[in-house]
Structures are given as structure tokens and as C-alpha cells.
Amino acid sequence: MSTITIDRDQIIATEKVIRPHIRRTPIIEMNGSEFGLGSFPLIFKLELLQHSGSFKARGAFANLLLRKIPSAGVVAASGGNHGAAVAYAASKLGIPAKIFVPTVASQEKIERIRGYGAELVVTGELYAEALAASERWAAESGALKVHAYDQPETLLGQGSIGLEFEQQSSNLDSLLVAVGGGGLIGGVASWYANRVKIVGVEPEAAPTLHNALQAGRPVDSPAGGIAADSLAPKQVGALMFPIAQTFISGVTLVTDEAIQQAQQALWKTMRIVAEPGGAAAFAALLSGRYKPQPGERVGVLVCGGNTAAVDFSQGTGTDPGSKKLSVPAASNAPSILIKGV
Picture (tube, one colour):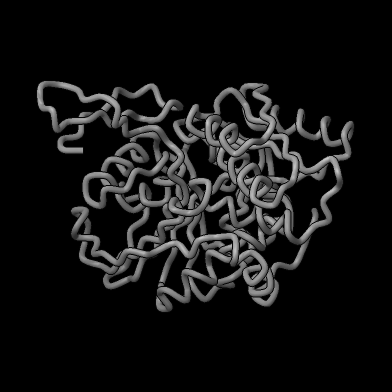
């Protein structure tokens, strides 16, 4: 199995390189009682406010600034967020980019990629098929592959979230992090290096890291559910897996219904519109799948907000102050009526 070293000194050096190009996203300190949970400190890191709508911009800029870029530019495969981030970073740095996404990618993410000026190819039903197509293009064109999670620079860029979060809230006891391919949790866990309990959260329909930890190696897993456009690769990354074995305390699985309820709670209580993958970490807490100890200071990464859930163009019902909060395209659940949007 591939092994690399991602340490705090490397993350610090990477953060200095990408800092001029990324936002220092805010935190919000609350209490669990505000969500009907027990009384304990609850600290949200709002990485959905990052450039391109998710944490992925950090890893994208790390790749484009730390690696040599050929004249053919870069190529990436993505469920949507990574593609948008690479397209955004490439547009800011004047680099040609070609992005491959599967048909499961949400329209919001597809429109973001196109809006940043990248060449877009929609192919295959799931991420793994888009990845295979992107690798064929890289071999044909000579473009640099920018992997969504299984690349050292990607892990280093995402690790800057841990550095930033610790500067903002230095006494966390635990941190809940959504897991897709593992680039986010791998980078963040490398930063904290067992100084904070890191808990991965995955949809039951895409238990990639959960299954890998049980098997002792990355294995093929189902890739479905409401967050399939961001948390459903075929396998967890080979580079981050040893990091997970060393620095992650465990993985909690949540249902699609719990993710939807977390989206609704974030909107109702905080007026935050998170995509399913962005709300997954909070779903573990809200659903009771993760139960903090009394007084435990719990951090939650809200890692993405690329959704067209709130439609400000039209109201519903008879109240002119009502707007429609639609469950994202990956879900078959009905729409939800929100008053006073």
C-alpha cells in the first residue's frame, strides 16, 4: 500500500503558499441545546463559505501552486465540488482545465464548473467512471492529473483547515468530519495527530472508509445515497488510509434521512444552506449516532454548500414570504416549505 508522510510542518508550509488564494472561513460557537441536544459546547467551522463553495479549493490551489503544470494544463474528475474547485483555481491562475463529472453531479455544481470557464465533460453514472475517463484524457493530452483526494498536495491543502480551526478554537475535544475519498479527514487528522479525537462520518449508502477499516485495506464499497455526488467514491484513498488507521478514532454511519434532517436543522437554526455532504458530519450528532460526553467541546465541519436547495426566484403557497427549500437533486425526497426566506 502506498504510504506518505503528511505532517504539521508540511501543512504549515503549504498553508503559507495557498493563503493568498483562499478564505479564512469563520467558526460559530453554539450550544447543543440550541438543536434540542444536551448542553455542550458546539463549534461549527463553515467551510461551505470557501471559494467555489467547498473546502476543495484548498487542495486545488495546493496542487496548482506546488506542482509543475504542463502546457496542456490540468485535468480532474469529480462528483462536482473538486471539479468546481480546480476550475476556480485554474481560472485564477490562468491554467487550462478539463473537468470530468458523472451524471449524478448536481446541476448547481455543473453550472459552477462551466461558470469558471473550464472545459466540462459529463460521463458515466458515478465518480469512478468519470475518473477513468479523466485518466484516459490525461494519457492522451499530457495534462496534469489533479486527484480529488489521493494526492499528497490535496491532503496538504485540506490539512490547512485543521491549522486554521485550531487557531480559531484551540481547545476542541472532538471533531466530526464527513468522509468521501478521505482527502479532507486525512489532511485534518494529520494536522491534529491524535491531539483531538477525529470522527469520520459517512452515509450508510456509501460506507467507504468504514468498510476499509474493517477489511484492513481500501475495498470497493457501495456508492449511493443522497450525498452520492460528494461522498461516494468506489474506494477510500490509498494515501490517506494509513493516516486513518493512525489518527482517526472511528467512523459513524448516518442515514439519508438523518442527513436531510441535519440540512433542515442547519437552515432553521443557523440559516445555513448546506449540501448533503456538507451536513453529513452534523447528522451524526443530531441523529444521536455520535453521543458526546458531558461538557465535551465538539467541532463540526460544514464542508460544502453547492446546492440549489433554496430557490429565491419563486414562492410557494399563499404566503408571499414563503420560499421553497428543495432537497438536492441526488434525493427523491419531497420538497420542504420554509417560511420567511
